[in-house]
Structure formats: structure tokens, C-alpha cells
Image (cartoon, rainbow, N blue to C red; front, side, top):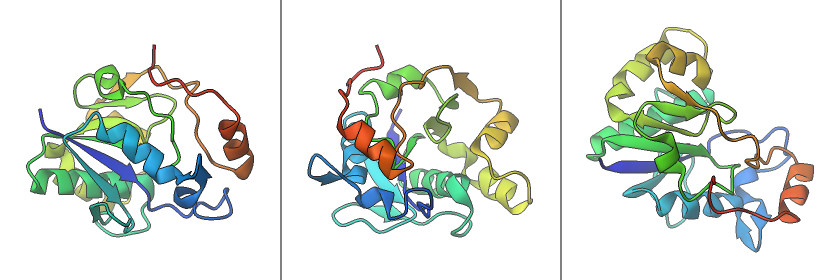
Length: 181
């Protein structure tokens, strides 16, 4: 199975107060930490929702401004159009992804219960997700995942999600495990 890693990075960062993807951790932007963690588990990597120097990027689908689900739709379309079977997704504000994330999720379609932007999805859903988004239903990844009967993995309580400058400060002071075990 060829897996594309996709970083969902098109959000407004309203709670953070500035662009989260650019927030510095150990001298590097947060998005680059996420890229490093996904890259070792995937056959390719793409940033969704924004241009990022030195990385391949793609737009949200069917249009910008639809939240993480629009980013997921863009990732699925990119993956399908470039010969991948599945897409492993994460938002750009989860810099301590475990190195065994792909194995933990297992097979498509699956997502983490506590962090629904983290999921493993078949690219076969690309067109169906665009149709779902155009139908004016909930734009929640969880709501769409329920319609797909996706597996929900009960892990992620301790996974650092950086939503505020305080979260970033706390994360910067913490020890960071590399595995979910």
C-alpha cells in the first residue's frame, strides 16, 4: 500500500493569535516537526492548504475555507491523482506524532478518537468527500467518518495539540516520546 503523508495546514490559527505552522520549536517551525514525523512513515509528503518552501503543496477541495475536512478532501484528491492508495493525515499543530502512527491506525479507514485530524483514509473517497462537502452537511471530520463507518482508535490522550501560545510553552518544556507504546 502506497501511503501519502498529508499535513493539513490551511487553518486560521485564531486561538493561537499568529500562524501556528510557523511557531518555532527547537529552532524549527512546527510544521517541519510534523513533516519529519510523517515522512518516515509514508511514501510521499504534501502540505495541504498553503504553500511551504521546499515541500509539495496542494489546495483544499472543493475550495478553501471548509476547515480540516476540505483539507482532507484536497489530500485525498492529490493522493489519488499521484498514484497513492491511502493518505495519512495530521494537522500542522501536532508536532510530536508517534513514529508508529501508521501501524497504530492499521488499515484505511481509521482515525484517532481524540485527534480526528489524524487518520488513514483510502483515496477512493476523494470524489465522495467533495460531494459530501457540497451537500451542506456537517464539516466535522468525525461526522464524515461516521458516514464512512471508519474505525475509531482510542489513543491520543497524551498527544500534544498546540492551540495556544501557552500550549506551545508547555510543550517546549516537556519530554517527547517517539512511540505510542
